[in-house]
Length: 139
Image (cartoon, rainbow, N blue to C red; front, side, top):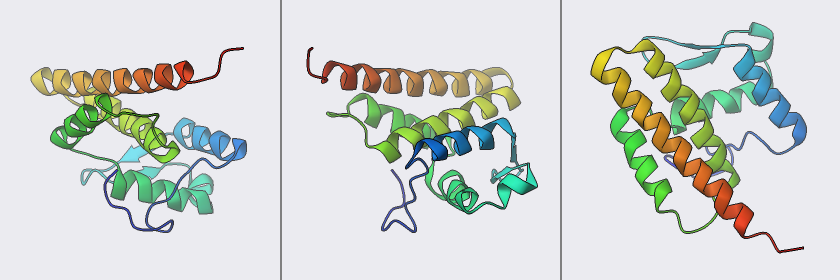
């Protein structure tokens, strides 16, 4: 979505069911977002895993962090002509996690703006899931 050039700088987190489980563990173990908006896994043991390095790269170098970037992503996704690629889907989900965190930490108008961004991302993913479901062959 943003910076990409190779598998090393453009990692995909979910290549197997075990990877999906691990990503879920990362999120359940709680994330820490510092004042510089860097995201890290609180659990030191989980944070030391090789997949955690890819998670760090995606969360800190790839997903959008500003409302403007997130709104741009939402607009792009709402006009996406095909099913999202796996990495775009997972990054959008992680952007949603980040957006919810920012909404929870904000007040007033900012809280509303973050919440609206979350809803837009949700609608784009829902559209993607419905689009992919409609493309399955009939039985």
